[in-house]
Length: 387
Ligand SMILES: Cc1cc2nc3c(=O)[nH]c(=O)nc-3n(C[C@H](O)[C@H](O)[C@H](O)COP(=O)(O)OP(=O)(O)OC[C@H]3O[C@@H](n4cnc5c(N)ncnc54)[C@H](O)[C@@H]3O)c2cc1C
Image 1 (tube, protein in one colour):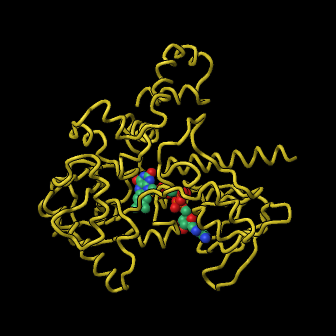
Image 2 (cartoon, protein in one colour; image 1 turned 90 degrees about the vertical axis):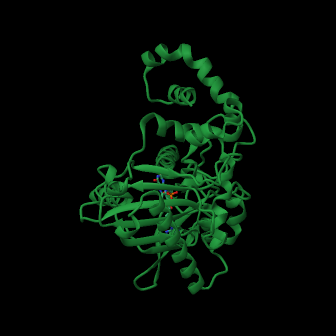
Image 3 (cartoon, rainbow, N blue to C red; image 1 turned 60 degrees about the vertical axis):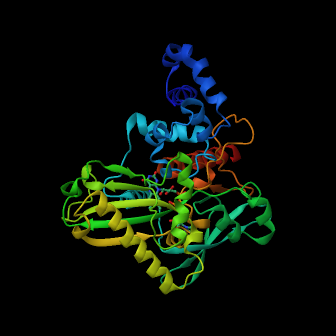
């Protein structure tokens, strides 16, 4: 992992000539780490190093569902970059929660004289005769009216499966061609509880804790965790990541309620075909089962619950408008061919339409930000060349 990070750092524009000269001697070994496993899965690399020692694998990759749930198909280099960064420098939390970041970005746009709209659904992208972006039609949530915003440059943040449906029919097949047949990432089942006491009062000791159930004996068992939510809770509970926001300066504990979040891999299939009543009942039953599980781990915690919020793959599918409720874009599978750079592509078949979401690269905040920045840089370069 360290060598992979070092190779990527060397090839980036982060450092000057002197730094590069000082580190040139390490480059062959670092590059070899990247090349050797460019097409490997996490399971393959772990098997080479640890054989059947599953305990070591769990210790190193306990937080696997932060990215995926099947180590056999999860791309080693994606894991090495994401988990390597996490192990090297820890995680980062946006103080006040991710909405704070969105709010700040909106403020910056407005401070610079831009305009922002929320609660408006993009319903069509107009395309000109030469295949160029003309503008976005959006529907206002307040009055349901459709408006065309003229825009020769469009950054599309929704999943390509959604963008496809917004384009004129004759442009859809070509636009979708690079994305067709690519499996999407996992979805999540997320429970946030508000407690009337600090979680540490019940023995929670860390910001992030992974609860790995006893039935999981191999790292590959992670992929059987999400399917448990296809039924009502039984003997087996899913693997869970638990976050205690009061362990850090999160800005979320100011009102005397202490939030704690439990998250598991989920699938949209687990919640499809249910009436609204059956869906609500199943969701509530799982909520209670998860509170019981947390109470087993940290006795007394259940009695301190004063608020609950639950999201399922189905609610994420509806809210984010992603296929399968995916939260990390496409699944990070090993590439079929050797790569010459990171697998990110913001270009589309429509001139002026750029993909700026995790579906154009990697998921998670870091992945989404990197793709957004790349889309902006590419569009500005394109505009300069066009002048
Ligand atoms: C519960 C949960 C916890 C997470 N925790 C973490 C974490 O700790 N760390 C981390 O790095 N990542 C985390 N993630 C993942 C991270 O949030 C995503 O990978 C990232 O936000 C993806 O960014 P994006 O820009 O691709 O898409 P999104 O952030 O999903 O943004 C896409 C937006 O487009 C909107 N949209 C879709 N269609 C339309 C339309 N037709 N018109 C108008 N708007 C539309 C959607 O409503 C959505 O707001 C978490 C995700 C979830 C759900």
